Image (cartoon, rainbow, N blue to C red; front, side, top):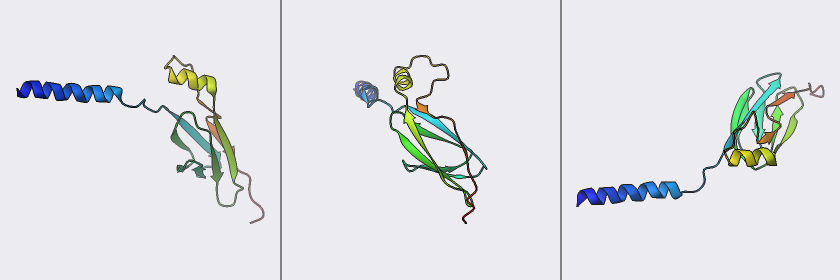
Length: 115
């Protein structure tokens, strides 16, 4: 009886995990700046210091602010690309396809002479 019960529970758990919600797909967002060691703040709450890589779920646009003391802050709007997103969700082979543009992001900060 224990064997049947154990087998039943194992099958039930495996079927639940197979029926779970669709796993979110992510893309790494690479951010670099000149000069380096700049603060990066994403509109979605993440932050890092350049150079950095942050994984973002596909499909939602966002902005990021790149700042460093003594330099003007730069904002970058990052948008999902519909055709690349469709390929990513169907798991079709991709040749350097990206779901977000721009990516990688390279920002050159200008000195802020007013400070």
